Image (cartoon, rainbow, N blue to C red; front, side, top):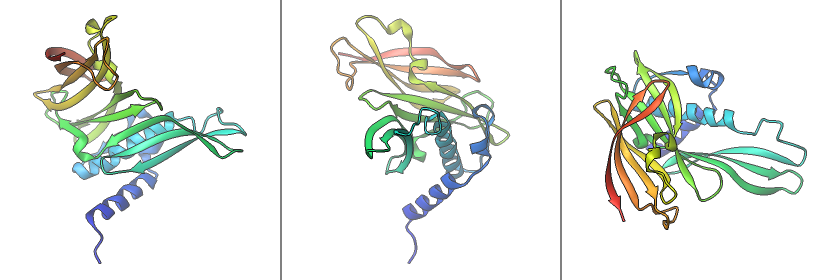
Length: 229
């Protein structure tokens, strides 16, 4: 008789994604979201990020033709919301596969804390991304809070948080994983591949601390080797 919490959540999420608001019309650099609670943050930040990728997609560009088209798709599963873009052969009805894929985590994947030392709670969202192959990377969205309003401040690739001095002909960058915000710093882990490592299994890892400079990005201030096989 009563709808389950999961069904209610799905209905709310679908309504949010279909609702046309100022988020879908504004520029990436000046969007603000009024923050009232974690659920509000989740639905509206997710909608904003989906709109961000929609604007970056090729589905509305001149690259479409009479024969092929770029199409986007949004799917929900237990862990995340997935935004994907693929190429479709209009005449043959053949799906050539995904050319880009982004995975936005559910609320427990959002990182809350004061990253710019202004005593307000900011939000960092880690999005898993892929270009259709086996290599996956992280894209990090930063939303800063000012007067109870979340403002998009920038998107960064995990490579932006790497330490280039660690990369050589024998050591390759693998990925960055954010952990938590503590005392104005983003704590996380950097992973590097040794010369014989498979892409899935980096043998070198560092625990890291980054500070965040608004509009300028993350600055690595401390690292410590935690794994080297």
